[in-house]
Image (cartoon, rainbow, N blue to C red; front, side, top):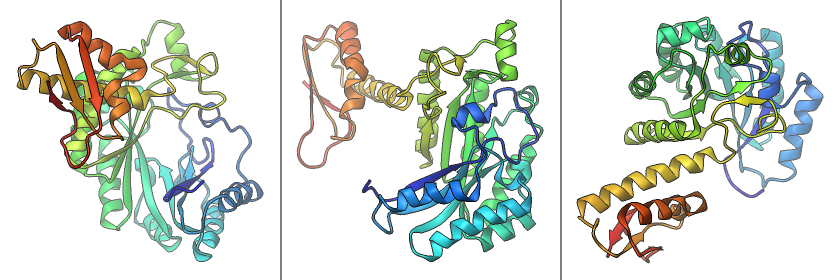
Length: 338
């Protein structure tokens, strides 16, 4: 490992959360059954430290549960261990994930004392009906209150949202994204709902009470959401659950829009939409050949997975040849010539 800004993930599955949201089985989602202890935590951190140049680790991150819902004694133990590595110069900060209703000024104060730098909130939706149906146990007022408190006290704010929950709709998902923009977080995660083994949602699915999103509609919706966030310079750091030994087809995923490269599918859809807009604007529909100029970073998005974008454009516009190139110097992304 040589990249900068590496994050060390510490999973504390379902720790600190008394609620059983309909979609949640943290032991399956994280792939971790054994509870985290001090020895295991140190082993994970040390394995990163020994393989990464000093100064390249940005944060130790506590995922998988509502961190501030854990008994305070255990919180401080975890934070103290993480702080040892901050003081020794190996790590720059600490990231936690928690519920919107598990943040108040007293909690904020000791998180500051222990050098927590980023707080991510599991918001899921900003529609009251969706939250109630998902058994979240909090309302949208909790989201606005906790977000403001986090920002006011100088933390990096992350918002985690879901699409495809029961009672969720296309318009509600767009509404949630626009409301999140109004909150102005530093980063966002988008998780399409999967039906996971041993959850209430699994029972609803088998009882015919819930139908998950199809992969194609998930990609189209997530592409729109990403564009909403990008227009407001909000970084979308993840789309979809990280594949694990359990989170995979024929594993604990019973149904839903699972794909190991969902982010790429979404980015390819965004690229295709931009390319088609250029084709129409420049009136290139009747041309035989086109050249798409893009950057090295975007070339796979332009081409699409298994050349899906190229095949789509050839079929729709009857192009004989589509060239994708990376020109020297500055250029617009998806600049199209013929």
